[in-house]
Image (cartoon, rainbow, N blue to C red; front, side, top):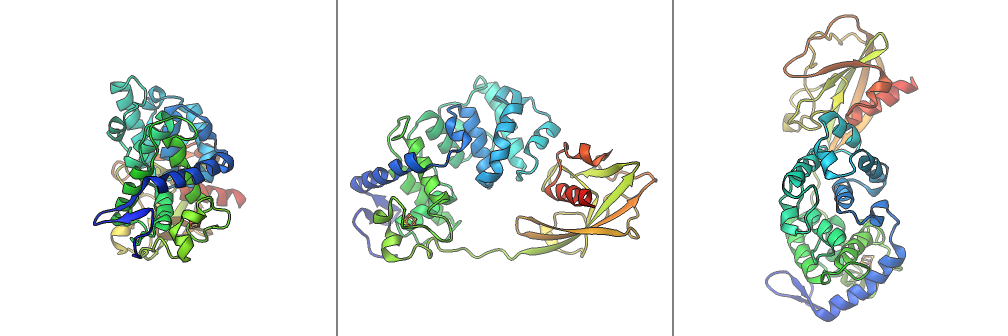
Amino acid sequence: MGAPRKGVARGAGSPRVDAATASLLRGALLPWFQESARDLPWRRSRDPYAIWISEAMLQQTRVGAVLGYWQRFLDRFPDARRLAEAGDDELMAAWSGLGYYRRARALRDAARVLVEHHGGLLPADPAALAALPGVGPYTAGAISSIAFGLSEPVVDGNVARVFARWFELEAPVGSAELARRAWALAAELVPPAAVGAEGPGAWNQALMELGATLCGPRAPECGPCPVAALCAANRTGRQTELPRPKARAAPVEVELELAVARRRGDLLFVRRPEGRSMGGLFELPTRELAPGAGPTRLFEAQWPLPGLAVDDWPSVGELRHAITHHRIRARLLAAEFSGEVAVQGARELLWCTPSRARELPLSGLAKKALTRLARG
Ligand code: SF4
């Protein structure tokens, strides 16, 4: 790390920000946010429930992808009472395509706690929020500050990156050290409790907005940046160097075969077992080739249905798909199938038309396969 600079003091622990620097940063960033913030639908809502749903959806998912889901989810589940009653299929169908399905189940679990202990409403209390299933420090801080105007910090990947550049933090992306320093800085910078353009909610959103727009991971746009004069990395020309990258997990190549079993216009689907990745979603019967891929295996090595003898079925196409660091190549093997299939274990089988299947909670790969089959 470089030498301490005016405005930022470094001791044995985290960097400290003096009051004058904090005031300058707020004075530069908040007006920019008022003028330049993207018009996102959840920013027009003051309903803590609606804000909570948006924050849950936005975790690990791009804004563009969430835009199509948020309002539909609220139409179907307008409050915690309705969400608490949601069945698995209804919930998964509303979430299908957003990925990280544990988030949807955690939302419903949390809704049940809200109904049981908080009158069906989100509490204006960061500790009570953080005690809800699936609500970590980020979401508790976001709801507290945005919905209730409380002086609570938030740190997500955008905020950590912005701070790494403002204060020349040397810890790598995703490291516990960078998180620790970023949370300490966020707690020092967040304004006192208030609602409105000067309050903690606006400040936290402004930080995230800067990281999501001008101060992106690859090519920060420092020219129009409202805090360019206060940013250490901009002064030293290290914008693209910080935050330091972390060592990447090597991509894992996965080869699959998907059985397209047709019976009188229906297709056969299998539900993935609970407790596994994408548990509860329907997929085409799938097997992974090249057994022995080790603990990263997402799919079965054998056909999950003993009655399905697919080996001679012709290939009708190929798909590419990615799940986290898995790079998937999948062959579609199709045939008319008149026999019966046996269920192995507690799996659930379903024959249904492709159009009805689109209303099921489907895996992303199954959705892609349906689109590919519809093209012929
Ligand atoms: S000056 Fe550049 S590096 Fe610094 S916060 Fe602004 S966009 Fe990011």
